[in-house]
Image 1 (tube, rainbow, N blue to C red):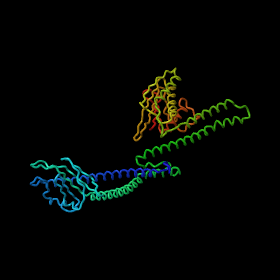
Image 2 (image 1 turned 90 degrees about the horizontal axis):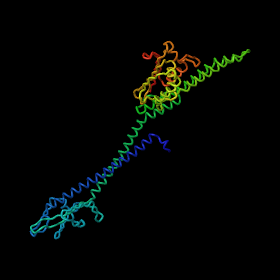
Image 3 (image 1 turned 180 degrees about the horizontal axis):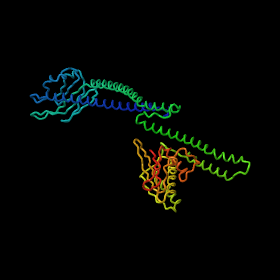
Image 4 (image 1 turned 60 degrees about the horizontal axis):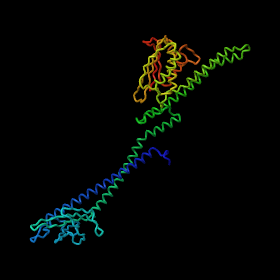
Length: 452
């Protein structure tokens, strides 16, 4: 099975299982090592206790020789083969505990006074022992008597307990792994349920049962579904705009074609000027409708276009075209303002509005561009205001200029095809446009709002 066809839940379960196995294995190793160290420390402390107990019963005889006075208070050393064995060696004295009866242990190694060794384990004749050996000295009137004291313990109990602990440990870790994997599987199945539901939604969307994806998803998927619905809405808007453009084009061409057809059927002289006029009219209609069809519209996934760059480019061009008017532009652009869409739409929108402003102004044109932010939206929108000190636009024709029913062959002086295209662009970006009277400049005031 290729990695691409390896399902998401299988990937999660596989990685989670590996992580769990590794984690529990490390826990098992750490716990096993901790148990070994702890029990070994207890063995060492126990043998050390026997050593100090034996030191307390070591004394000298009248002839200044070592002897063990009484070990009845140390029961383990008085019971044959009890598992605890003691030995004392000096130059002229060797002693073994009663518990060593029938037990063969090697003689302790010689140590310097004050030295201590701990053998863990000590192997002898196929058996394991723990042994602690100390180098000691007994002070007498005739001088010091050095001797070695050794206490040994059979290690079989330690290894038996260690084996039992390891068996129980790994059994419980295995059971814990199985239970954890089961719980993990249930959690993953519950966690991935929204993804399964999203897949079902997309299948219904493809079959045409629904027209958009449900918004009832966790926050992690809400952004995806929201952007997906916007993308679908944009695509439908583009399709409807293209259909509308084709319909308007066909409807607009009927009248010029009918006139040309009627003129060509005329038995008399053909009016070439009339035919030429209608052909030019048809060219204007086609050009206008193509511009409308080229509007890209709101895009969910796009890179921001710096507004100031395009604005300065348009103003430089208009300053050259209207150089005789010596137009003064008053700019106020928010730092970092960006247009999230096709740069051609921005050029068309600003170009048409500014050209009208330059054309109708007396001498002043004002441009104000602000950013617009909305909750839960990472990118920003725009508020564009363009005003001039010209004659303005009467209230009676403002709504007509921006009406959707304006045909390509309808000409309104000063505000014709250009404003229709601007209106189409603004609507395609789900914005709105207003035409007002500017109180300062006393002319037309266009306010365009483009949401994020």
